[in-house]
Image 1: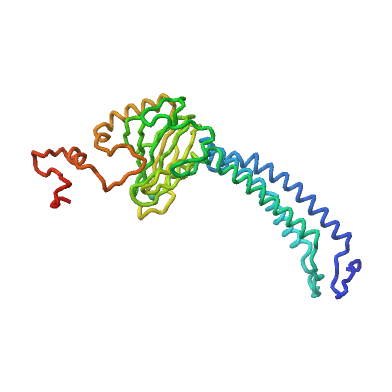
Image 2 (image 1 turned 90 degrees about the vertical axis):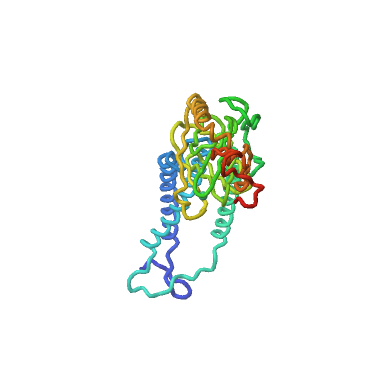
Length: 329
Ligand SMILES: [Cu+2]
């Protein structure tokens, strides 16, 4: 290259006009591709981002993922563009065995890098913190005394509920190896394997376990909360779409962990009220031998009367269970 100057060490140096031209091209291409990329991610991919928009909390999470994906797009494009440009134009020419120009630091690049990355990380930390607690704790388990309610109604009554009242719907989620059951204290306390919810009504999940640690993951509702034995873990959701949703266990809990799933359903208010009424009647004989509703359970503490009643035994007949009898298990 006749036009190339030489460094003091004798290595060829790209002339400044070539370097300026590269910079202008790279910057222009990066800006144009980033604008196109950001629009595609935000407007085309964004509406399909997981976990979907079947609840207020899920929609908030989908928005967060879209925002983060859009912010990441210029970074990814910048890295790939610079990499491709270097491969195409800055590679060593055949037969050129000279060393490249030695680098001795560049204060402008270093300062720009530190300021830009610090600003991005700090801004994301603030955004992430705000989004983590809104709306209503973003659908995550908040422990027994949740702080982030974001205007949700209180649990004014734990024994009755009607749609659109100032009283949040309570659903207890009970994990055990290897199934989920759901208890509805405001409808007589029946316990069922079916999870039904009314649309557009805030729900308070009280999540607990009878044995090991499980994790209640109603993915498309944006809810994920650990189910710990002896602990009540509260999570909120407000479903906004009628239809089915999947429930999984997201904590390795034993050999059949993978089979611990269920299908829930979001229904209209009137269908939900009809379902609770019918289920309460259908399960009445089982409900009356369940332990009284509580936020945690000890499965080893089963009242003797419940066992006898379930088995149809009486003290006059044989086999009556007496917990005070050491001969009995
Ligand atoms: Cu599990």
